[in-house]
Image (cartoon, rainbow, N blue to C red):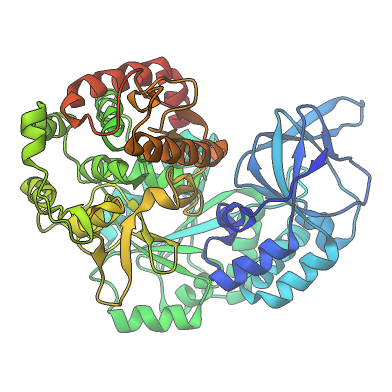
Length: 552
């Protein structure tokens, strides 16, 4: 086991779902207190009966939690994956571990010692509240199936009675399919008999707060996924239930913005989301609930990044629906069309606009001011399909990366006008004019700070990631490798080297890595777009089975 000192602690912490709702300052606090440890396959993290307690969270790898039964045979308790945390109950109770934990593959873990953990839950009240709730449930639970920890989230629907089943039943089915764990649905409804013929459904008509708490605590300790239907629930009962609910899915017509704000004030840890009963949205939500959302990070690479259209083609033909997309530079262009729901044929149509050197040259609107080109022709091309669209209009959540050149910091773009965001992400310094924002920031190409934005997905809780690095490795011969390089060749090769290495490092947190760069190609050869696209299609098919496994 080896300690790893990394400047990326902040991003690793952001990628753990339990820390998602923390402020930047709170994430900094966590990052200061954790160690990054690397374990080899087969190595034990802790042993049953020992009391060496720590907080653990997985950033990469698989862990098997097991115990020995009365016959001294090993029983598997659960399998933990990227994003999961463990060790909490032993840590909070000072008791010996009731299980052992072993790595099923090379694994990277965040670890925090007991003193730092206790300090953390005092410094960050929301974490203290969350872990206190888990400890209380664990101590009250009569059946925790031998686990050291309870990882439970309670979800609720509040809306229209004839739509509740349309939302909850398929969501529960998909959640069970993805997680292989049975959820339970609870209803607290007036004038309803306390029985149900369905095993997944329990109905209660009690208004007693102690009884309601007893019921909830019982199910929360037994089921990892508890759903509650708040439709036709008495207000006083609903308020008691809200104390236990982590996320509520709300119909637009049910509560005013003022009422929602009041609920958020009374229950600050409660998340409120809008209801969407589209089948694809429910499947994506089930993956989110199960902690198994799938995302794709599309890197920069100028013309070399047109291979990403081939990746889009394969994924659309295979009906692989990603839960989130991130993109930098040319990846921002492909990602935007993908997230907006356009078929790959539309992007093929776009690149035929410059499928010869002469056509490509026509797009170069020389300005010689803050860049060689103003970028107006590129904007006009994008606006043929994307004009007027905002991030809120997209079918798939999208994160685009730019760089604030004045502060040299990364900027994530996820709201507002889509074309404006793309133009910022592709504004290569010295080539295209930068984008000036009303708040004084000046944005240029995101590839400078994050050429492969895997971290943008990780910190949103995406635990299964495909990374597409469109920069050439040192093993790939590109046209800038001339033995008598020009000044431009030297600049381009310098960028290739730096951005490829940064991208390769970022890809450590990805599950599938694609580097679809053709031999003897170059960053400016946009007129070879169809050729690059076909190469990207070929490289994607080589790892298609691995991508499909992420959705299983």
